Image (cartoon, rainbow, N blue to C red; front, top):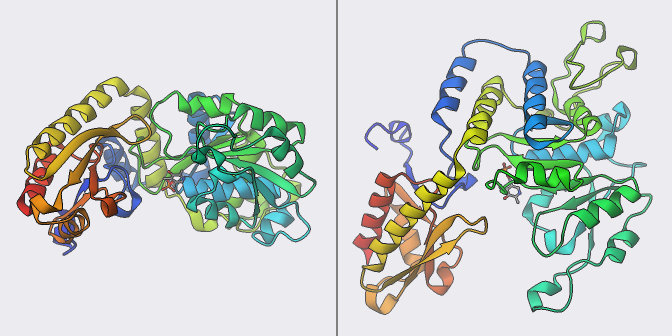
Length: 396
Ligand SMILES: *Cc1c(COP(=O)(O)O)cnc(C)c1O
């Protein structure tokens, strides 16, 4: 930590025990991707050529017709929605997020509503919620009946949005949506690993699937990608690429956008503020290859070993009870219950104390109110884990 770039800038470094959380910087970019970004920073490439190459690699890896690199999965949701709203209509592209006169409803299962759907609304769409969350009440009722979706889709529907959850299968949804000629957008931002999810949602009929590049892929934090239909990706490109172009000389790669020059050049689209630089594009591409080649089983073993070691050492502290948990993707984590009468400090105070130190130590706070903090092994080195355990012990 002595050679920390953050400390050099007089900013506290963070020991990250919360996984790939954006607010503490997401992930460690793979070394080979960092090297590639350094090289990319020294010379130039046409952004649309880099995107065309990315499209090919994303298509190979996911089975989609095409792909596109965006500035995060949330950015991907906005751009995929913009593509569903505008299609190839330069006029609509120019107006977004104003959708007057354009079908602009995005139907979303109630159980799939979450804060990230602001990114869908940011394109100008309006959400229509269907179904409910009965499953959380216990067994018996489903979160979405097919007839509910069927009836919610109408002439004003631009898309259906879906977040992978066990309670509602994707295939019946894509089947119904496609019968009405409506595309389905899937927010699969954090659904890697397992790697098979790269292909799964495309195979199940999704028209645009959005993933983060800065989570398990360990590319640049401000990247994500869309895997989807060629026409939707072309619309994304037209609404994202810098359009400071002259009609007579505008010549983007045909594999990305099959434009007829006589159509003219679109204005800067709604995605112009979602810029992806050459360094991010190159960093993403290199990280993505490494992710595809990675031995995920070995990685799980590493996370498991780190989590168990943290669990053992924290459980040995009087007043702490550490147990194995998982993060919803099967990645092993540690849940630590704090008995305040023994430790003299409650979980909330402990979490705040750790975050107030230098370096800041971040542990999971979601259940701190009920006396439990969590530790996620994914963004910790063994050395970090050692330090984290030491700091927790120091307060208890
Ligand atoms: C992380 C996440 C996002 C946002 O991803 P970014 O790449 O940070 O933009 C969106 N949706 C879900 C479900 C996520 O988990």
